Length: 170
Image 1: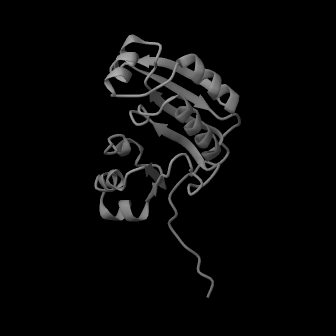
Image 2 (image 1 turned 90 degrees about the vertical axis):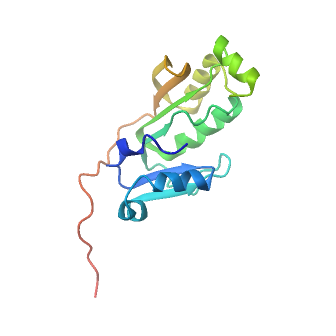
């Protein structure tokens, strides 16, 4: 919720950070110096499953770990579909969720600590959207189910360096 993974992806430029809560976005900004957080980090407040404000087909990686455990199966499917549209060909979607075929998953659901879905249903949904599933396993630390899947194609645009100059037409 506070962007703990962000320091590991700081080389991403721009770094897109999206959440449903403005306070989470503010916590993320506070992890960096003012220059980076104001010039290199782009924040988006999400509204449901509508990601149309984000640049479509522009992401090489969308990472939703320890964030979407309160989504039910339909919500997980809606998110996967919206993420598919964000990814460039060859882009990767990484996420974990509460699997309802496990006893711990059912227990979290019953306690109101998570929603979730069944892994077989998630796999079917991802494949029907068009994803190629590269990895599916259970995270032993959080006991949540993890997927790494890719949009077909190859990433063709790789940024070699930051922009260091600007040409202004007089």
